[in-house]
Every structure is written in C-alpha cells, then in structure tokens.
Image (cartoon, rainbow, N blue to C red; front, side):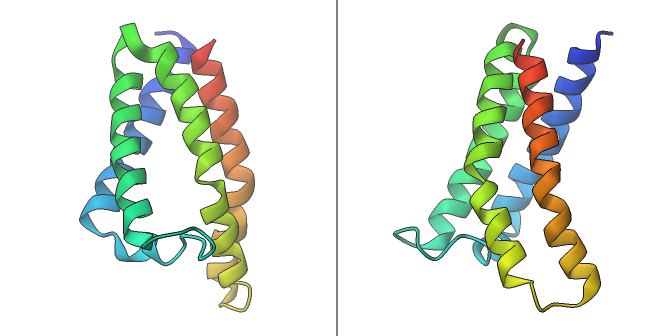
Length: 120
C-alpha cells in the first residue's frame, strides 16, 4: 500500500467521523462558527458535515482520490476560521481547553499538507 493511499484512508476516516459528528451532535460545532458569517451557525455546521462526508467518499474511492485530496485541502482551509474562533473564544478557558484550541491551528496545516500529498 502506498503512502498516499494510507494517507487518503486516514483522511477519509477522519473526515467521515467529523461529518457524522457535525450532523449528529451539531451544538459544539455551532458554537465555533464565526459570528461574522451571515445566517444561522447551524447552516454552516450542517454544510460542513455534508462536505466532510462527500470529501471522505471522494478520498475512499481510488478513481476520485486525487479530486478528494484537492477537495480536502480546500475544506481544511475553509474551516480554519472556525478553529481561529475556537482559539479566541477559549483564550480564558482552563489550560487543557486552551491547549486543544491552540493545538488545532498547526494541525490544520498538517492536514492541508497531507491532503495535497494525496492530490499529487
């Protein structure tokens, strides 16, 4: 199994799980939607959940894997403002929550790089 194939499988699993969580338990995700976005936070939460599931599907199928990598990179960039919002909102939270919020920021760059690797 090639490295890109393993990476695609990991990303598909991560995005599939995240997509299910966004749709099954949307409340925590609603809370990190930047308030400057127009419309209800729930709309963005559900849309990102559907997008995550769609991209997971693209990554899981060898024929659409390259497109899935491109779509995953774009999705990881698109949701980065929510991670920034979480870091800002949790800036006075307990150290563990702050570490989670701040840790997500560089992790996003790693996920983008992995998605780009799959796209190549």
